[in-house]
Length: 117
Image 1 (cartoon, helix red, strand yellow):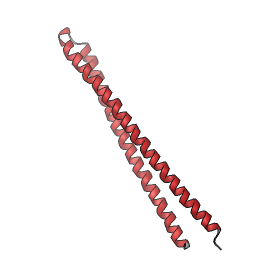
Image 2: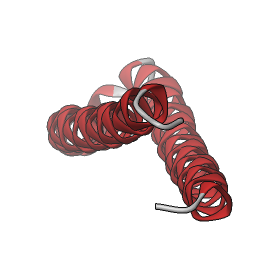
Image 3: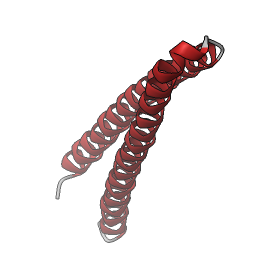
Image 4: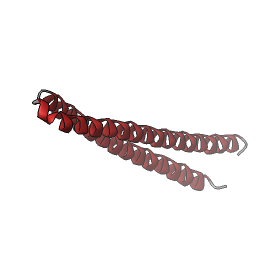
């Protein structure tokens, strides 16, 4: 293998790694943004539920419906949060696997260079 080909391969592998890391960061920011939006919606619903709890007895049925909606949203929020965490873990696993592959290729290249004159 010629030296300039190894340099190109290493450069390409580094570029691939940077692209993978950028993709991961963008994905992570999207997950964080979505999670923050869900938290803000949950806080607003909690605020509305508190206000409804202070309403007259005639509005108790509406409060109970709102509480049920809030509990359902909280359940969905927890489920979505879990799904997002799983996606983050999968992304991290993929990134670590990719980094290990790059490390192995670079290590193999270095080992091959030791035997060259």
